[in-house]
Length: 464
Image (cartoon, rainbow, N blue to C red; front, side):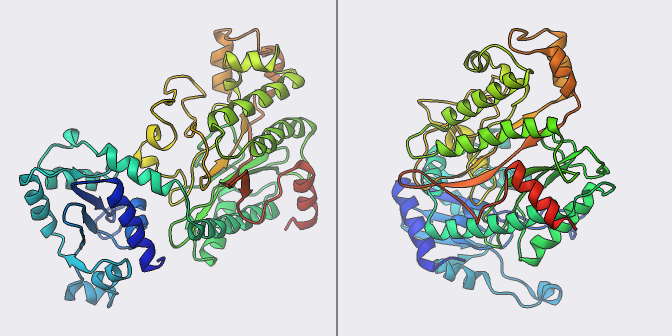
């Protein structure tokens, strides 16, 4: 946990921004895999973690703005639980570390909220994402799940705090990124023809565990980089393949890293792989150079799209002018994803609160319909204290190519005959994490090799 004052100050700011009513923050509960006593690894809700820092299932908290008091609700272990779990630090002791002096049993939460409703006081709560919390809110507020109306006022107040990272939060993220860096280097050392993808997953998971960290998301480690969220690890690597490794860890306090590197199974990239890689790498570097306060990330994404289009025009796969091609969204055949997203206590920070609030503004809302743009999670102007990813890519998806070609879509910008030579190429992505500073940006972590020459040199010297 951070200092007691950290949590007190965060809650004080929240109370100032939500001027009246009762703020209800639900922690997460354990979720069974196949029966109740065999749960998935527990992960606390990030907003609960931000304001209370307690890593304990089945907790809730009330911040009563009107009465200026805070209560943590949860049940202490009974003797049967102690027999199985041993003596644990009490909820009361953990609450005191977060600056909360009053704790009550979990069953008392319903009565507290009932009284507040009878007094016609506003009850603020966040969008629930766990099925158990959806049912719990329905029970506590005496309404159907479909009728639950999260508080937009609370959502905006929390985003305004969490999107600006404190120095101590940045330190945690730095730790996560540096462990993630080591995982990526280990994968580059190990990968070779004849190896299974799951062997790389196993190796980097051990490295994470050795640093008292765990994956911040399910890794994407695949020879099929064109499958954007590929969690199948059963393929055998062979000569001529590339490995796309999108993986990161979170610290014990919950702060994430999120990196991607793509490298050849052989000692060197093929000429074709190198040419496409260099297009992505240029977009990767140029996008970073644009990061500073006041710049709309949507425009950084657009710039990356133009660079990718120009590179593919130079390669002969696209044609026309890059600006015109991007204007007609021809680039989305190859760059279907967003350039990046916010990162912090969540790898996609605060995504549970709604992208329309986290990544966009009411004056400049998200494009939720246009292919390639609807996947851009962050579009609004950058501020000092933002932490975000930059992750351009080029993906040759055979099914998508076939569909566009059958429709002869955007034939003025795509050379389908030349494209056929890349149909089974795969995909390439490069990703790093950045902090927005006073006048620009800071790369988080100690840095990870990214250029063709750096990767080939590392593979030549360190292949296990």
